[in-house]
Amino acid sequence: MFAAFRQGCKPVTRLFGFLSLAWLAACDAPLQTGANLGPTVSSGRAVQVALLVPGGSDEGSDAFLAQNFENAARMAIADLNGPLIDLRVYNTASDAAQAAIVARMAVDDGAQIILGPLFAEAANAAGVAVANSNVNVLAFSNNTSIAGGNVFILGQTFDDTARRLVQYTSGQGVDRFMIAHGQDIGGEMGRDAIATAVRQNGSQVVAAEAYPLSQAGIFAATRQLVDTAQATGAQAIFTTAGANADLPIIATGLPEAGLDPTQTRLIGLTRWDAVPQLLALPGVQGGLFAMPDQGPATLFQDRYAATYGSQPHPLAGLAYDGIAAVGALIATGDGALTRSALTTPEGFRGTSGVFRLLPNGQNERGLAVATIQQNQVMILEQAPRNFGTAGF
Image (cartoon, rainbow, N blue to C red):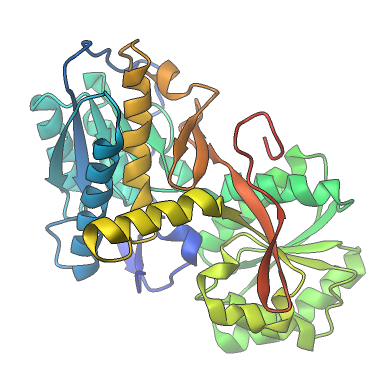
């Protein structure tokens, strides 16, 4: 995982958990236009796909990611039964200006769709650069602020996770939510996603509390969090805390401050299973979080390791998913890589289960609802296998 990820135009040093590896705020507003429809492709001819990866920078982690994305994309191409894809790889060096240059270069070379880049600033720049070229971009980011127009995001979003968990807990009789979030942009984005999901579900946000991102600050805040939860009658505290950042402190401090999990359940926006040591903390016992369908996720990881001799980066599957979606559309015989084709309600099957792209450029993924009991992850509700079952 990264020790840092990029925010706006400057680096920051906080990794916001397993869910947020691809997050990056864009420096420019996303392109919001309905003019881009996307191309149709000739039957029987290879579709040219440009893969934009963060290679060529000074960061060793970027080179590792770039290779993982390419490996996963080529594995997906090998798995296609019939559709022909001509994959061409371009390095963005994790730089927005470079991403715009190579995106235009890829289109000039004949690219009919672009996969990547990863970081949102670069993805936004690539989308803007080719907006008038009738080419759609399937970015690996999970930052919803860049989604729209010709840019679709493939990364798991806060919005999607929040919707799934609010829907599930509402079915369990929970309709009064308190939000606890870190005092940074990632925490604020998570707060807004939770609040929107709660309100769209007809439930109530009874309080929203921020805390400073320091060990002492979080411990000091836990007493206030518990007091607020008790005073407002919150049935759940929905936290944005990340597994390898603030969650261990939250999960330790809340029980010590007197939180009664039988009265107020802890819900997490991020993957709690990302750090195995967390499973033994008292604060996460009986709490809720969402995770992908582990059947296809494990299958992808095992096949990748068998093919390339090492485990894939957690984000590598996004490149496989992009190729799988393109291949599925080619296989229909319609030859369309248009917005309407990409946003087919039936969606696609990827490395972590079913997913679909939405007209607003965001995505929905089939997520399981999990809890932790006796230091073990337990699935309470399986991930849906299509878009007509629970969670959708």
